[in-house]
Every structure is written in structure tokens, then in C-alpha cells.
Length: 75
Image (cartoon, rainbow, N blue to C red; front, side, top):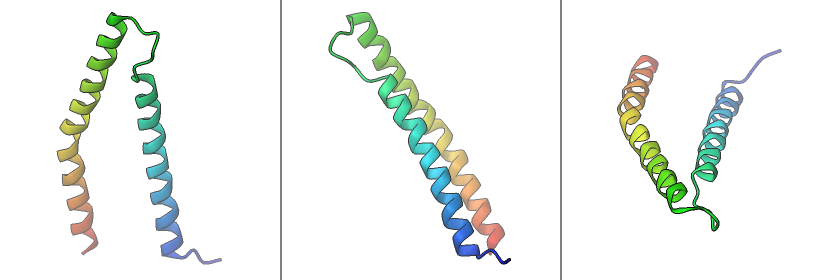
């Protein structure tokens, strides 16, 4: 039985993107401001949102470096 490279890559990519979307969606729902929240809860959720954005910004160079190395390894 042969495995086609195109099928393997698309399935792997879809799994990773799906997992990332699920994680971000859960984080977004958890940090979402709701109608009955107190002022303290709203402030904490705002801090959590900004912390999440800061973490994504801090991790983005590592992602770019990793992808660059991966593409260079393929060439």
C-alpha cells in the first residue's frame, strides 16, 4: 500500500490548523466578556486577552525561524 505525499501533507496540515483553531477558540471563549461579569472580572479578562496577544507576539519569531529552517531543509 502506497501513501501519497499530497494526502499526507494535507491531512497533517489540517490537523494542526484544526487543533490551533480549537485552542484559540477555547481561549477566546474563556476570556470573553459576558453581560453579568463584575468590573474585576472584566479587568482580569482584559489582562488575560492582552497577555495572550503578547505571548503570540513573543512566540512568532520562533515560528518564523522554524519555518525558514524547514523550508531550507527541503531545498
